[in-house]
Image 1 (tube, rainbow, N blue to C red):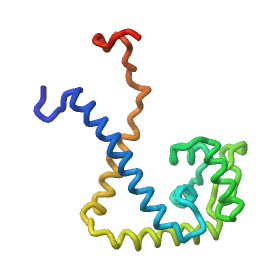
Image 2 (tube, rainbow, N blue to C red; image 1 turned 135 degrees about the vertical axis):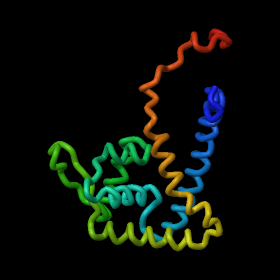
Image 3 (cartoon, helix red, strand yellow; image 1 turned 90 degrees about the horizontal axis):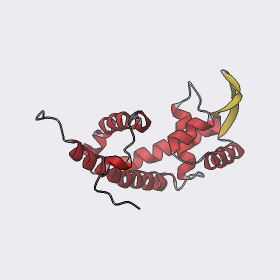
Image 4 (cartoon, rainbow, N blue to C red; image 1 turned 120 degrees about the vertical axis):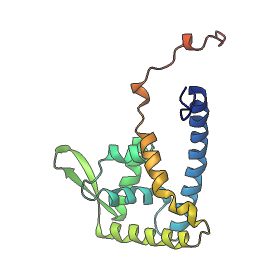
Length: 169
């Protein structure tokens, strides 16, 4: 075996540890965002919707994109966008490529609130003593994008026969 390549078992353990670290990091980042936007008239999840709309200004996101990016159910996203629409932070527009689909665009008030949230987050980040960790964020994002592009359906799913030591149920 190549000296630089990990065994399948080692990779499996590392993948499991990655899941644990992602869960822990997700909680930390979300808690940080929640604290940064707590004085604004939006909740953490609403900020994330607005942030996605801000990131995708050139190609406004459809609801299914928000579901995928937020990793929540379609009904949850539906409630979020409806609440943000009622608050005047987003506007629904017909997708020019598919008139049946609606895409979400930041309103002027939405731009204002998302920029206020970004400023609040930036102020909070400036108080963190872990500058080295913050400088690693782009690298971590790149790695997570690569991991996120792994398609578990493209690989063969293990069957009962792949686990000969497993007892029958």
